[in-house]
Length: 110
Length: 115
Image (cartoon, rainbow over the protein chains, first blue to last red):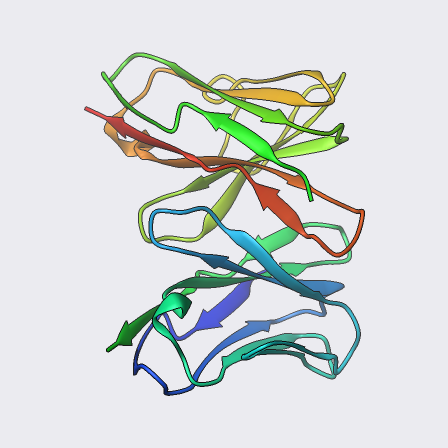
C-alpha cells in the first residue's frame, strides 16, 4: 500500500551542526511537500517538489526530490535554535491521496 | 495563502459527550480536510469535506463517530461524538491553496482531552 517512511524519528544536534531528514516511498509520487511544526504549533507548509531530481533552496534549507520520485530529503545547514520542531514530508500519489511521514523531531543543543 | 480560524483551541471533555470543532476560512475553497494528530505522532486524515455533498471518510473513521458539516465554501465543522479517552488528540482542519505553491494550510488545531 501507499506509505511514506521518514527517518530519523528524532535528531539531536549541536547548534551550528547540519541536519538531514529523509523520506522514502515504495511507489512513485506525483509530488512531495515538506512541513515544519513548531512545538505546540500546527504544521506550516515549507515547499513542494514536483520534478524528478528537483533541488530547491530556502536560505539554509535544501530540499531534494529523487530521480525516481520515490524519495526526498531536507537538509539544514548550520542549525539554529529557531530550527527546533518536527519536520514532516507529505507524499502525493497519482490517485491524489496525500500521506504524511511520521516526522523527524529536531532538538538543538546550545 | 488562506487563513483558517479554528476553535476551540483546546477543551477538556467528559467521556460520553460530544464536541464540535469549527473552522472558518477567509476564502472560498472546494475541499476542506480534517486531520487527527495524536501526541508526538504524524497527521492522519479523517475525512474530506466538500460543500454540498457528504464527507468522504478514510479507513477507520466513520460518520457516526465523526459527523462533518460543510454548509458553504468557507466553513466546516467536525464533531467528535460519544468521546472516550482514546479520542484525546489534536484535531486540525486544512485546506489546499492552488494559487501559488502554498500546499496545505492548517488551522491552529484543537487540543482535546477526554477524561
